[in-house]
Image 1 (cartoon, rainbow, N blue to C red):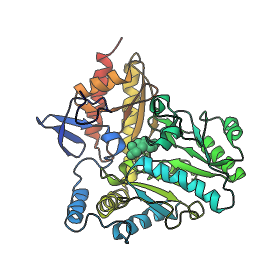
Image 2 (image 1 turned 45 degrees about the horizontal axis):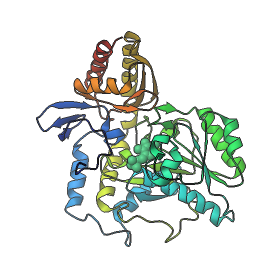
Image 3 (image 1 turned 30 degrees about the horizontal axis):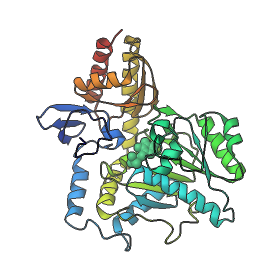
Image 4 (image 1 turned 60 degrees about the horizontal axis):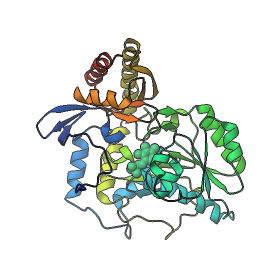
Length: 390
Ligand SMILES: *Cc1c(COP(=O)(O)O)cnc(C)c1O
């Protein structure tokens, strides 16, 4: 018999009742160090005092009035995102998949209003993940996500990452855009070389296409920059953001240049909840913290400590762990042991991590961690290395 909660997840048998900073506490009061952040969402940890105060205040004022009216918090958030990025304009939704969906629609509309209505296809990459809607599973192209859901949505051409020739060969008269994660997340924390991002940009410019970055997982400080592509200096035309944007409140955003968004006029796209007062109050509070002087620099420092420590652990347990890759507070440890076993053994030691593709264990600590939390996680990883040694 089916459970009341539809069983689409293979869940660990744990119920968390509250959180504080980098820690989660179960109903029985057991403490877990959260190096998964609910899959890169709680970037500022749990119950951050500034976020709690902002949401409390907004909760007593107004939750929702709809996009039929202006929303002060949404206008403020959009203005701050525009000021901090390549973008001129922002659409708000409620999730990563919706942000990517908006990006895909926007690219098609851009060509439509520029007299090229035949351009609707998007070039995508092996190992990508873009969400679980019908369009975004087609964009991600993973067999396990597509199976049984009918013919995949048309309009996606997949090529290997880091293959400029394959990329150019995939571009045709119907191509509208190229969609890429600057660091593949679900695919196993695979950073894209700056050279290749430059090749993507150059091909797009040559053929009049739009570059879409999916920074749903990499965005909002996780890379040590506000957005991961800032490390390469190669800007997109459109960018999807979500996960850590609201610090745990569901909110997604699709940022774009004025030119890319030229087709997004009144009536072309919408979302009932998108950018409502509660969600944008949370996201504005997140930005208050992340844009403070020195905050992102401190993330880089702590990320260095974490990475060095992980490298030491790998050197001690070469039979269990292979190597580490990633940027900032987004590290993937490629394992010899099954990544799921490593995550399970870490959990038994009260440290949470997240498995990813390519037999990788993702370490996604909150950006507010201190050295002692990093050392606590490294000690658990080291112990697991000993425990799982062949
Ligand atoms: C998580 C994720 C998504 C989907 O976000 P949802 O909020 O689950 O819809 C899309 N792209 C990337 C890169 C992600 O990591």
